[in-house]
Each structure stands twice: as C-alpha cells, then as structure tokens.
Image (cartoon, rainbow, N blue to C red; front, side, top):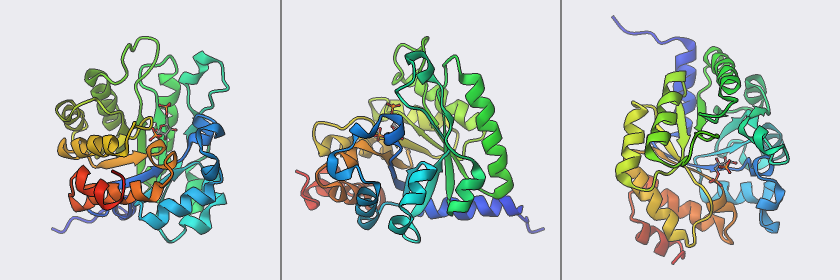
Length: 277
Ligand code: FBP
C-alpha cells in the first residue's frame, strides 16, 4: 500500500529541500546585531540590506535572521533565497549570568507570515536556564509540527559546569540532545578535527549537522579548511556569519564556500578561484 504522508510532513520536506537542495547548504547567519551588538559589523555592513544583497547575489542557499531583519530586507532576499527566521535571542547587555538564557524574539506564526522556510531557536545545553529553553523549544517545535515548518536548533552547550564548550564529548552531547528533542537541523561548534566532528554527526543520528561558523579566522583559507573537514566528517554544510560579513569581499567567501560544499572543490582551488589567497 502506498504510504501517504501527513500535510505537515510534506510541508517540512518541501521547505527543507529549499534549504538543503542537494542535501547540503551554505547558510548566512546574521543575528549578531542582537547577539553581539551592532559594533560586530564593519561600517559598510551595518545596513542589513547591503550585506544581505551581497550574500544573496553570491548565491547563499538561505539566510538566518531575526524577524525584524527579515521584514526590513525582504526586497533583498524575497524569491531569491530561502529564509530561516530565528525566534530566540539575547543581548550581551544583560547581566553576565543571565546571558545563559535565550528569550523569544518571535513566534512561528510570524515566521510563516514572512514566508519562512524554517525557524531557528537556540538551546544553551548545560546552563541553569536549560529547562526554560527546553520548554520554549518544545512549544516552538509543536507549532512547527502543525504548520509543516522545519526547526533548526543552535545546539550550544555552555554554562558554569562546562569547562570547554568545544570538547567533543560536550558538543556531541548537545547535538544528541538536539536530535532527541526533535530538531530537524542542528547547528553546532567546531570540535577541532574531522575525527571528532564525525562523532558529533554520528551522535545526531541522521539529523543534518551544520557547522556554526565562529569567530573570524586569521585567513579565509583557514575557514575553508575547517569546512572541508566538516564535510568529510559527514556534516551537511555551514551556517556562517562573521567569516563572511567581516570580510572586505563577502561575496568571494560565499562563492568559495559554494565551490566546497556543492561542487566538491578543495579549499585551495576554491580560494584561488575567488581571489582569496
Ligand atoms: P558566526 O559564524 O559569526 O559564529 O555566527 C554563528 C552564530 O551562531 C550566530 O548565529 C550567533 O549570533 C553567534 O554565532 C553566537 O555567538 P556566541 O557563540 O558568541 O554566542
């Protein structure tokens, strides 16, 4: 007998396929205006329209932004690339101990209104606020299930008991917890090697794992080499912010990442072709 999917399963599949067109993706993250503050952007990229227009024209598979930025920049991304709306966030203006909590920045219905292909939400696994964030995640994921909307989890272990948040044991635990709570996509930290990152991918048990870009590397080729190892470890691509928007030529980095992720080129080939070496 032919298996008939639920409406919601179809919706999730259709939306996910707009992001992971060949099973992999280069996603541009730009929630830093809230997460780190506007000084994170070089002056020429403070205006979200400018940087989003650049990365979209370079061919990113999706952008991940807060609802207000999606609204401000719809002319730049609409009908041109997939949209992931992040519905949790925090500022670093908070007292230090409260920076372990992500609060709502939007709701699933707003993301739908904006035309989103997925929503994103963070859980800081291991913090004293883990319980609150888990509860919120379950609420968001429930709404997503109704509307056929995929949910990406920024699975970020941190907190007072975690000494090294990049330790494979810790990152792997976060990725597994993300899979167990029902994430459809997982974004997490680089663990420092292909071997360790493959353990993270395995722990996620088939839920696609994407690299969380991290701070800008000294040279563009350094970042491309990390992404190469992520792919070799079975990772599904990258969600990158600073290693794109903090560069003078963000388009070149996006195109180089596309060469790696979708065309299987080496970091050296991709960097040379895009004038990054
Ligand atoms: P980057 O590529 O710049 O690291 O962006 C990825 C990201 O997860 C952003 O979405 C988020 O704002 C930031 O990193 C979180 O940074 P931090 O680890 O300092 O909380």
